[in-house]
Length: 361
Image (cartoon, rainbow, N blue to C red; front, side, top):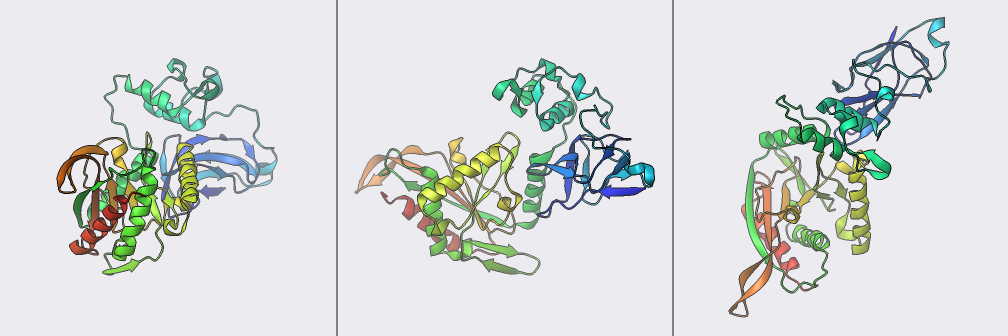
Protein backbone atom coordinates (compact mmCIF):
# COMPACT_ATOMS: atom_id res chain seq x y z
CA UNK A 1 0.00 0.00 0.00
CA UNK A 2 1.33 3.44 -0.90
CA UNK A 3 -0.20 6.73 0.25
CA UNK A 4 -0.45 9.87 -1.86
CA UNK A 5 -0.52 13.07 0.18
CA UNK A 6 -1.74 16.55 -0.75
CA UNK A 7 1.28 18.08 -2.48
CA UNK A 8 2.61 21.60 -2.01
CA UNK A 9 0.48 23.69 -4.35
CA UNK A 10 2.95 26.56 -4.26
CA UNK A 11 3.01 30.13 -2.97
CA UNK A 12 2.93 29.05 0.66
CA UNK A 13 -0.59 27.59 0.55
CA UNK A 14 -1.13 25.43 3.62
CA UNK A 15 -4.53 23.86 2.97
CA UNK A 16 -7.16 23.13 0.35
CA UNK A 17 -10.81 22.09 0.19
CA UNK A 18 -11.93 18.95 -1.65
CA UNK A 19 -14.26 20.08 -4.47
CA UNK A 20 -14.77 16.81 -6.33
CA UNK A 21 -13.18 13.40 -6.73
CA UNK A 22 -12.64 12.14 -10.28
CA UNK A 23 -12.07 8.55 -9.14
CA UNK A 24 -13.47 6.12 -6.60
CA UNK A 25 -12.28 3.15 -4.55
CA UNK A 26 -11.44 0.21 -6.80
CA UNK A 27 -10.87 2.32 -9.92
CA UNK A 28 -7.73 1.97 -11.98
CA UNK A 29 -5.90 5.18 -12.83
CA UNK A 30 -2.80 6.09 -14.80
CA UNK A 31 -0.07 8.54 -13.88
CA UNK A 32 -1.00 12.20 -14.44
CA UNK A 33 -4.70 11.42 -14.75
CA UNK A 34 -6.83 14.02 -12.87
CA UNK A 35 -7.39 12.54 -9.43
CA UNK A 36 -9.18 15.24 -7.46
CA UNK A 37 -10.14 18.93 -7.75
CA UNK A 38 -9.31 21.10 -4.75
CA UNK A 39 -10.06 24.73 -3.99
CA UNK A 40 -7.29 26.86 -2.53
CA UNK A 41 -7.79 30.36 -1.22
CA UNK A 42 -7.87 31.73 -4.75
CA UNK A 43 -8.49 29.02 -7.37
CA UNK A 44 -9.78 25.54 -8.15
CA UNK A 45 -6.85 23.25 -8.99
CA UNK A 46 -6.79 19.74 -10.45
CA UNK A 47 -4.37 17.40 -8.68
CA UNK A 48 -3.06 14.63 -10.97
CA UNK A 49 -2.35 11.08 -9.92
CA UNK A 50 1.33 10.54 -9.08
CA UNK A 51 1.30 6.95 -10.38
CA UNK A 52 -0.65 4.24 -12.14
CA UNK A 53 -2.55 1.77 -10.02
CA UNK A 54 -5.78 0.82 -8.28
CA UNK A 55 -7.35 3.14 -5.70
CA UNK A 56 -7.61 1.35 -2.34
CA UNK A 57 -8.89 4.19 -0.17
CA UNK A 58 -9.86 7.87 -0.33
CA UNK A 59 -9.01 9.75 2.85
CA UNK A 60 -11.19 12.86 2.42
CA UNK A 61 -14.75 13.65 1.39
CA UNK A 62 -16.07 16.48 -0.73
CA UNK A 63 -16.14 19.61 1.40
CA UNK A 64 -13.29 18.52 3.71
CA UNK A 65 -10.46 20.99 4.27
CA UNK A 66 -7.10 19.25 4.48
CA UNK A 67 -3.58 20.43 5.17
CA UNK A 68 -0.63 20.16 2.80
CA UNK A 69 0.97 16.76 3.42
CA UNK A 70 -2.25 15.11 4.66
CA UNK A 71 -3.23 11.74 3.08
CA UNK A 72 -5.39 11.95 -0.04
CA UNK A 73 -5.52 8.43 -1.43
CA UNK A 74 -4.03 4.96 -0.95
CA UNK A 75 -2.87 2.85 -3.91
CA UNK A 76 -2.77 -0.93 -3.90
CA UNK A 77 0.59 -2.49 -4.58
CA UNK A 78 1.46 -5.65 -6.44
CA UNK A 79 0.76 -7.04 -9.91
CA UNK A 80 -3.01 -6.61 -9.67
CA UNK A 81 -2.73 -3.00 -8.66
CA UNK A 82 -1.85 -1.72 -12.14
CA UNK A 83 -3.80 -4.00 -14.44
CA UNK A 84 -6.61 -1.64 -15.32
CA UNK A 85 -7.12 1.36 -17.51
CA UNK A 86 -7.88 5.01 -16.97
CA UNK A 87 -11.28 5.89 -15.52
CA UNK A 88 -13.36 7.27 -18.36
CA UNK A 89 -17.08 7.20 -18.89
CA UNK A 90 -17.78 4.68 -16.12
CA UNK A 91 -19.76 6.51 -13.38
CA UNK A 92 -17.78 6.81 -10.15
CA UNK A 93 -19.41 6.77 -6.72
CA UNK A 94 -18.02 9.81 -4.84
CA UNK A 95 -16.73 9.50 -1.31
CA UNK A 96 -19.54 11.28 0.48
CA UNK A 97 -22.93 9.64 0.73
CA UNK A 98 -25.04 11.50 -1.79
CA UNK A 99 -26.74 10.79 -5.15
CA UNK A 100 -24.32 10.51 -7.99
CA UNK A 101 -24.05 13.61 -10.17
CA UNK A 102 -25.12 11.69 -13.24
CA UNK A 103 -28.42 10.95 -11.46
CA UNK A 104 -29.10 14.64 -10.87
CA UNK A 105 -31.27 16.57 -13.36
CA UNK A 106 -29.34 17.38 -16.57
CA UNK A 107 -28.38 20.90 -15.52
CA UNK A 108 -25.09 22.43 -16.60
CA UNK A 109 -22.94 23.39 -13.61
CA UNK A 110 -19.22 23.34 -12.92
CA UNK A 111 -17.92 20.91 -10.29
CA UNK A 112 -17.21 23.79 -7.91
CA UNK A 113 -20.80 25.05 -8.31
CA UNK A 114 -22.20 21.57 -7.62
CA UNK A 115 -19.99 21.28 -4.56
CA UNK A 116 -21.20 24.67 -3.32
CA UNK A 117 -24.82 23.57 -3.80
CA UNK A 118 -24.19 20.44 -1.78
CA UNK A 119 -22.55 22.39 1.03
CA UNK A 120 -25.46 24.84 1.20
CA UNK A 121 -28.11 22.15 0.87
CA UNK A 122 -29.44 23.56 -2.39
CA UNK A 123 -31.21 21.23 -4.83
CA UNK A 124 -29.91 22.22 -8.27
CA UNK A 125 -33.18 21.17 -9.87
CA UNK A 126 -34.89 24.06 -8.05
CA UNK A 127 -32.36 26.70 -9.14
CA UNK A 128 -33.09 29.08 -12.01
CA UNK A 129 -29.90 29.18 -14.13
CA UNK A 130 -28.67 32.54 -15.39
CA UNK A 131 -25.26 31.55 -16.77
CA UNK A 132 -24.18 31.29 -20.38
CA UNK A 133 -26.01 28.55 -22.24
CA UNK A 134 -28.35 27.94 -19.32
CA UNK A 135 -25.67 26.94 -16.85
CA UNK A 136 -26.03 27.35 -13.09
CA UNK A 137 -23.59 29.85 -11.55
CA UNK A 138 -22.32 30.37 -8.00
CA UNK A 139 -24.54 33.44 -7.76
CA UNK A 140 -27.60 31.36 -8.69
CA UNK A 141 -26.79 28.91 -5.89
CA UNK A 142 -26.14 31.72 -3.41
CA UNK A 143 -29.49 33.33 -4.23
CA UNK A 144 -31.27 30.02 -3.79
CA UNK A 145 -29.54 29.44 -0.46
CA UNK A 146 -30.47 32.93 0.73
CA UNK A 147 -34.12 32.09 0.23
CA UNK A 148 -33.92 29.02 2.42
CA UNK A 149 -34.66 29.21 6.11
CA UNK A 150 -31.34 27.82 7.37
CA UNK A 151 -30.31 28.14 11.00
CA UNK A 152 -27.15 26.05 10.75
CA UNK A 153 -23.77 27.78 10.81
CA UNK A 154 -22.05 28.05 7.45
CA UNK A 155 -18.29 27.42 7.64
CA UNK A 156 -16.16 29.91 5.72
CA UNK A 157 -14.63 28.37 2.61
CA UNK A 158 -12.13 29.30 -0.06
CA UNK A 159 -11.51 33.02 -0.48
CA UNK A 160 -13.65 34.06 2.49
CA UNK A 161 -11.75 31.66 4.74
CA UNK A 162 -8.41 33.03 3.53
CA UNK A 163 -9.67 36.59 3.97
CA UNK A 164 -10.73 35.89 7.55
CA UNK A 165 -7.30 34.51 8.34
CA UNK A 166 -5.59 37.51 6.76
CA UNK A 167 -7.73 39.93 8.76
CA UNK A 168 -6.91 38.04 11.95
CA UNK A 169 -3.21 38.15 11.10
CA UNK A 170 -3.36 41.90 10.45
CA UNK A 171 -5.10 42.52 13.77
CA UNK A 172 -2.40 40.54 15.59
CA UNK A 173 0.65 41.93 13.79
CA UNK A 174 -0.04 45.55 12.76
CA UNK A 175 -0.09 48.78 14.80
CA UNK A 176 -2.33 50.90 12.53
CA UNK A 177 -3.02 54.62 12.34
CA UNK A 178 -5.13 56.51 9.82
CA UNK A 179 -5.07 59.98 8.28
CA UNK A 180 -7.70 61.36 5.90
CA UNK A 181 -8.12 64.23 3.44
CA UNK A 182 -10.19 65.27 0.43
CA UNK A 183 -8.95 66.04 -3.07
CA UNK A 184 -10.61 68.73 -5.18
CA UNK A 185 -11.15 67.09 -8.58
CA UNK A 186 -13.53 69.68 -9.97
CA UNK A 187 -11.21 70.34 -12.92
CA UNK A 188 -11.12 66.74 -14.14
CA UNK A 189 -12.49 65.84 -17.55
CA UNK A 190 -15.93 64.25 -17.49
CA UNK A 191 -14.50 60.96 -18.81
CA UNK A 192 -11.49 60.85 -16.47
CA UNK A 193 -10.35 57.33 -15.56
CA UNK A 194 -10.51 57.45 -11.75
CA UNK A 195 -8.48 54.30 -11.16
CA UNK A 196 -5.66 55.37 -13.47
CA UNK A 197 -5.50 58.76 -11.77
CA UNK A 198 -5.33 57.09 -8.38
CA UNK A 199 -2.53 54.81 -9.59
CA UNK A 200 -0.54 57.80 -10.86
CA UNK A 201 -1.16 59.71 -7.63
CA UNK A 202 0.05 56.80 -5.50
CA UNK A 203 3.27 56.69 -7.53
CA UNK A 204 3.68 60.42 -6.84
CA UNK A 205 3.14 59.76 -3.13
CA UNK A 206 5.76 56.98 -3.11
CA UNK A 207 8.27 59.29 -4.80
CA UNK A 208 7.62 61.96 -2.18
CA UNK A 209 7.78 59.48 0.75
CA UNK A 210 9.35 56.13 -0.23
CA UNK A 211 8.89 54.84 3.33
CA UNK A 212 5.22 54.10 2.50
CA UNK A 213 6.27 51.75 -0.31
CA UNK A 214 7.88 49.27 2.05
CA UNK A 215 7.60 46.05 4.04
CA UNK A 216 8.01 45.86 7.80
CA UNK A 217 9.20 42.82 9.75
CA UNK A 218 8.19 43.13 13.38
CA UNK A 219 10.21 40.23 14.74
CA UNK A 220 13.43 41.65 13.33
CA UNK A 221 12.41 45.31 13.87
CA UNK A 222 13.48 45.93 10.29
CA UNK A 223 11.98 47.29 7.08
CA UNK A 224 12.63 46.97 3.36
CA UNK A 225 11.96 50.05 1.23
CA UNK A 226 11.19 49.16 -2.39
CA UNK A 227 12.35 51.01 -5.49
CA UNK A 228 9.52 49.63 -7.60
CA UNK A 229 5.81 50.17 -6.88
CA UNK A 230 3.91 46.87 -7.16
CA UNK A 231 0.37 48.01 -6.44
CA UNK A 232 -2.25 45.70 -4.97
CA UNK A 233 -5.74 46.46 -6.29
CA UNK A 234 -8.51 45.34 -3.92
CA UNK A 235 -11.38 43.73 -5.87
CA UNK A 236 -14.69 42.80 -4.28
CA UNK A 237 -16.42 39.59 -5.43
CA UNK A 238 -19.28 37.45 -4.06
CA UNK A 239 -16.66 34.87 -3.06
CA UNK A 240 -14.58 37.34 -1.06
CA UNK A 241 -11.82 39.89 -1.50
CA UNK A 242 -9.09 39.46 -4.11
CA UNK A 243 -5.99 41.68 -4.20
CA UNK A 244 -4.09 41.01 -7.43
CA UNK A 245 -0.91 42.94 -8.14
CA UNK A 246 -0.37 45.53 -10.86
CA UNK A 247 3.40 45.40 -11.32
CA UNK A 248 5.85 48.29 -11.68
CA UNK A 249 3.11 50.91 -12.05
CA UNK A 250 5.57 53.81 -11.97
CA UNK A 251 7.31 52.77 -15.19
CA UNK A 252 4.39 51.80 -17.43
CA UNK A 253 2.25 53.80 -19.84
CA UNK A 254 -1.38 54.42 -18.96
CA UNK A 255 -2.72 52.23 -21.77
CA UNK A 256 -0.48 49.36 -20.69
CA UNK A 257 -1.69 49.73 -17.11
CA UNK A 258 -5.29 49.85 -18.25
CA UNK A 259 -4.88 46.65 -20.27
CA UNK A 260 -3.21 44.99 -17.30
CA UNK A 261 -6.03 46.04 -14.98
CA UNK A 262 -8.71 44.74 -17.34
CA UNK A 263 -6.88 41.42 -17.65
CA UNK A 264 -6.75 41.19 -13.85
CA UNK A 265 -10.50 41.81 -13.63
CA UNK A 266 -11.19 39.02 -16.12
CA UNK A 267 -8.92 36.63 -14.23
CA UNK A 268 -10.62 37.44 -10.93
CA UNK A 269 -14.08 36.95 -12.43
CA UNK A 270 -12.99 33.57 -13.80
CA UNK A 271 -11.21 32.57 -10.57
CA UNK A 272 -8.10 32.10 -12.70
CA UNK A 273 -5.64 34.50 -11.09
CA UNK A 274 -2.06 33.15 -11.12
CA UNK A 275 -1.02 32.70 -7.51
CA UNK A 276 2.15 34.67 -8.14
CA UNK A 277 0.01 37.70 -8.98
CA UNK A 278 -1.62 37.57 -5.55
CA UNK A 279 1.69 38.06 -3.77
CA UNK A 280 4.37 40.70 -3.48
CA UNK A 281 2.29 43.88 -3.22
CA UNK A 282 4.35 46.79 -1.89
CA UNK A 283 1.32 49.05 -1.23
CA UNK A 284 -2.43 48.59 -1.80
CA UNK A 285 -5.29 50.65 -3.24
CA UNK A 286 -8.90 50.12 -2.13
CA UNK A 287 -11.33 52.08 -4.29
CA UNK A 288 -14.28 51.34 -2.01
CA UNK A 289 -16.05 54.56 -3.01
CA UNK A 290 -17.49 52.88 -6.11
CA UNK A 291 -19.85 51.14 -3.67
CA UNK A 292 -20.31 54.02 -1.22
CA UNK A 293 -18.71 55.51 1.85
CA UNK A 294 -16.48 58.51 2.46
CA UNK A 295 -13.57 57.63 4.76
CA UNK A 296 -12.42 54.31 6.23
CA UNK A 297 -9.96 52.76 8.65
CA UNK A 298 -8.50 50.17 6.32
CA UNK A 299 -6.77 46.85 7.02
CA UNK A 300 -3.09 46.41 6.16
CA UNK A 301 -1.90 42.98 5.06
CA UNK A 302 1.63 42.38 6.41
CA UNK A 303 4.39 42.86 5.51
CA UNK A 304 3.03 45.96 3.73
CA UNK A 305 3.01 49.19 5.71
CA UNK A 306 0.30 51.18 3.93
CA UNK A 307 -3.06 50.98 2.18
CA UNK A 308 -4.80 53.98 0.63
CA UNK A 309 -8.55 54.12 0.15
CA UNK A 310 -10.65 56.26 -2.17
CA UNK A 311 -14.18 57.10 -1.04
CA UNK A 312 -17.24 58.04 -3.06
CA UNK A 313 -16.87 61.16 -5.20
CA UNK A 314 -19.32 63.82 -4.01
CA UNK A 315 -20.06 67.50 -4.37
CA UNK A 316 -19.06 69.78 -1.50
CA UNK A 317 -18.54 73.44 -0.74
CA UNK A 318 -14.83 74.17 -1.17
CA UNK A 319 -12.83 77.43 -1.22
CA UNK A 320 -12.06 78.49 -4.78
CA UNK A 321 -10.10 81.67 -5.46
CA UNK A 322 -11.08 83.01 -2.08
CA UNK A 323 -14.78 82.27 -2.50
CA UNK A 324 -16.99 79.26 -1.68
CA UNK A 325 -17.77 77.05 -4.65
CA UNK A 326 -19.49 73.73 -5.29
CA UNK A 327 -16.74 71.29 -6.28
CA UNK A 328 -16.38 67.56 -6.86
CA UNK A 329 -14.26 66.03 -4.10
CA UNK A 330 -12.59 62.64 -3.71
CA UNK A 331 -12.25 61.47 -0.08
CA UNK A 332 -8.90 59.84 0.73
CA UNK A 333 -7.98 57.55 3.63
CA UNK A 334 -4.46 56.35 4.39
CA UNK A 335 -3.91 53.62 7.00
CA UNK A 336 -0.26 52.96 7.84
CA UNK A 337 1.87 50.76 10.11
CA UNK A 338 2.92 53.25 12.77
CA UNK A 339 5.93 51.25 13.87
CA UNK A 340 7.48 51.65 10.42
CA UNK A 341 5.97 54.95 9.27
CA UNK A 342 5.96 58.25 11.16
CA UNK A 343 2.93 60.50 11.14
CA UNK A 344 4.82 63.18 9.24
CA UNK A 345 5.79 60.72 6.51
CA UNK A 346 2.21 59.54 6.16
CA UNK A 347 0.92 63.11 5.98
CA UNK A 348 3.46 64.11 3.35
CA UNK A 349 2.62 61.01 1.31
CA UNK A 350 -1.09 61.84 1.42
CA UNK A 351 -0.40 65.48 0.53
CA UNK A 352 1.55 64.36 -2.55
CA UNK A 353 -1.29 62.04 -3.58
CA UNK A 354 -3.80 64.85 -3.18
CA UNK A 355 -1.66 67.35 -5.12
CA UNK A 356 -1.34 64.94 -8.05
CA UNK A 357 -5.08 64.26 -8.08
CA UNK A 358 -5.85 67.97 -8.10
CA UNK A 359 -3.89 68.55 -11.32
CA UNK A 360 -6.15 69.03 -14.33
CA UNK A 361 -4.32 66.32 -16.33
